[in-house]
Amino acid sequence: MKLRMLVLAAGLVSIPALVAAQQVAVPTSAAQPADEGLTGSVSDENEWQDLGIAIPAFPTNESVATAAEGGTTEALGRNVARVVFNDLKNNGLFKPVGPDQLPAVGFPQVSAPVFSTWRGRSAEMLVQGFVKANPDGRLTVGCYLYDVALGSELARQGYVVRPEEWRRAAHKCADMVYSRLSGESPFFDSKIAYIAETGPKDRRRKQLAIMDSDGANHRFITNGQATALTPRYSPDYSRIVYLSYLNGAPRIYVYNIGTGQQTLVTSSNNPTFAPRWSPDGKFILYSMAVAGNTDIYRVSVTGGPSTRLTDSPGIDVGGSYSPDGSKIVFESDRSGGQQLYVMNADGSNQKRISFFGGRAATPEWSPRGDQIAFTHMAGNFKIAVTDPYGKGMRTLTDSWQDEAPTWSPNGRIVQFFRTERGSGKTGIWQVDLTGRNERKLNTPVDGSDPAWGPVLP
Amino acid sequence: MSRPLLLVGLAAATLTLGACASKPKTLPPEPGTAATQTTQPPMQQNGPVPGSQADFLASVMSDTVLFDLDRYNIDASDQGILQSQAQWLGRYPNKSVTIEGHADERGTRDYNLALGERRANSAKNYLVSLGIDPSRVMVVSYGKERPVALGSDEESWARNRRAVTVTVN
Image (cartoon, rainbow over all chains, first blue to last red; front, side, top):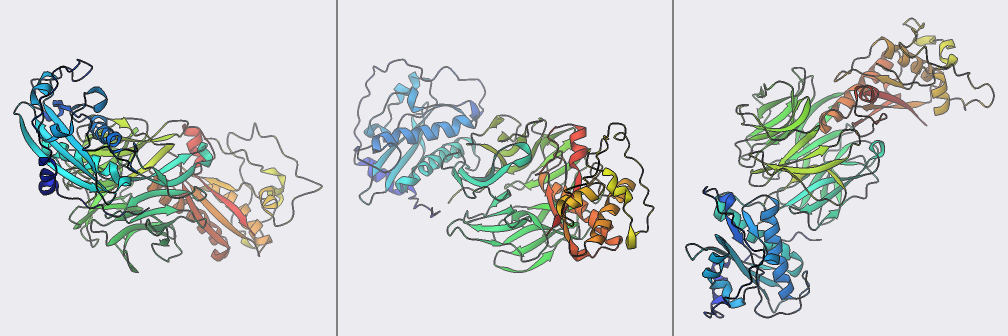
């Protein structure tokens, strides 16, 4: 499979033209049956989370066959709206109502909504769009966000995608809605690498796998014959670094998704583990044990000699760059138990930042730079966040064993994995930065070690 | 704390430390297990092939040393076990071993890989201190990936914090 970036037409220019040609002031059929629809969800709060958003099926100008899911552009339009709806609903964002609970809209209405209809349904926001087959086989998906009360358009975008990439258009649409209404950066159009787990506790089969942020397009990368652990997507999604016991010993490999080839991160005979990318994708941090002592090293993606960044007699492991690449937060037991330390990217000025009681491990710097997520081990293993100076620590989860946080691309959601006491069964979960909306992701089998990549361009 | 009921057997006690002997070879009985331990008679006929993994298991006190939480030091009982392994290695100078380091499930993945590595190296270093050539002792860490005890309780975790010596042909 190719990870070719899709051609994204900034719809601000192209879509109005497409739609304007069709624009007709069509009066709505006022006889909308009062089905489920939007229920009274209007609250006194102005919080954007409480906005009711109607997302009817995206109509097409002409229903023709397409290779995308549904088989025709008409069926695809409904599927696109469902993906937008599920993106928002599953993440606890807004109060969306999807195409299966709403009447269909005609193609001409996409750019000229009948606001009175939607006011009657208590919708505060309206997402409409269309699907159109292009002569070259690709699809154009338009996405419009309207403020129903104001009766005005807030945003619009258009996307030109190959049929097999149709879900990306839906994610981009959900991202537009989310960003415009919340003021936050987008995150839906992104992917997750993780470890798929099956089998009994003492013979766990662990495979490298990838999926879209909503669990779609799931794919196993390795077959499980060698245990795979701790993957990380490169910032451009072209490669994945991960640990494999391929030849019997733990080593970090750089797997090229396009070619299916993989290379060792370093030719050393020592075990290497805990790989991480630099934000620009030019360097890989890894941990290496030499005669039992583990330190953190940096190597260029193109190879060459490694630079040793830590030299304490304790275990120094992991590491996560600040978004500007100037600092690294890592974990060390040099003071006894595992704690968090921050150092400059060249290894200088190492300072402990965690003084929370218990142990602190697996730090991950938020893409926004203002927070560090980590595993707090004090009785239970909990996901917690702190600022880069170790201040303002907050616990986001509390279960028997939650560990290994990874950030959504916009730094608003933390994913992690949860292990069940006794059975050892694992699952990927997420929680938002406020500690709300905790939920388990649907994966075909058990999952651990999630790593969320950036938003696709 | 319970120790794994491995086949300690009489054979181990009758071995001499030979050239490596620098420690007293009388080993105290394992606390707690002696009372329940049924003495396994050493296999008289059809014994294991000399130098094989089966021979190793039948000859040494144990193939496993255990560690306390987050620790990697070799204590007195570990020393006895490793001494018996060193004896076996002394008898079969062409044999090599791999020491597999493990951690319990109650730790984070990366750290446990490092900890397993540290434990395996501790055991290796002790064997080397007894005169075993370091090139004959490889180490590999499995972190928390390969528990031998499946419970989520102190007893299981204690059994999983281990370094296991496996012969290599």
